[in-house]
Image (cartoon, rainbow, N blue to C red; front, side):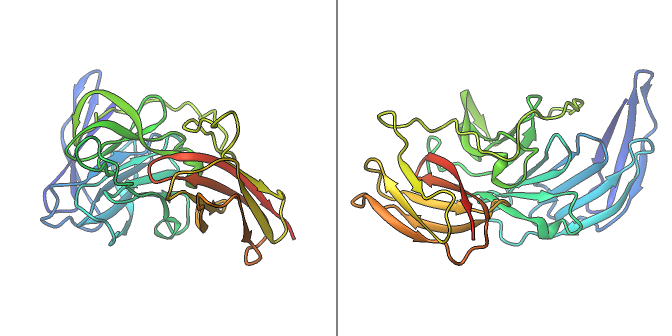
Length: 305
């Protein structure tokens, strides 16, 4: 059986029709929560794969998260919040296969929220921002998105483009979800759209959520670009460059929640540089080496006291 849901314009109501092998049921109306205003002609909505949540989102009306009764079709217990720092009305949303993480593609930023958190709005994590690389005419941004049958989330840009952004492991929190700009090359043009694929698969993910999988980095000359030592460290590390790096290359450190905690510019004329970590609590951290246009290297750093 399938529920078909259509929002009623400028209200907090939704038309619902149950479609079964026996035919199409009688439409019903369910109303709850904060009404949509007149600026409702953009954005996206989706159900969680387990059928327990319904999310509707656009920039002007905010994020509406409802509990969904898959038996009666009723919406209840709305959670609402506004995202005030999005660069455009062209936005999208998708939910991870395990129904835990909500992804907001907000044009100039890609965000993750934890639907299991006591305060969903406060669980916000910034996963990525555009890098100003044309695809092929204008820089690619984050617009409409969809959870695909392979368990990954794909995100379209605006205008005509030849690639989609990819969240490779959406069941994982923070940067462990592995967002990748332009991670899927297309064989033909796409214009600001994404297929609508009803989700009926509930297979658990098989990937780990405590390590990075690097698919975009190829060592130069058989060696990694940098070496970080000592590791584990106490209060200071040394970054050794094995070869020249492009101008504008950064060493970026994140905590276990994916939050950036330190950023160091790697000058191409330096062989080694020391980085102080005395202001950070002990724990496991993750670093990335990123140039203007690509990921060069990732790794783990353990900080002791």
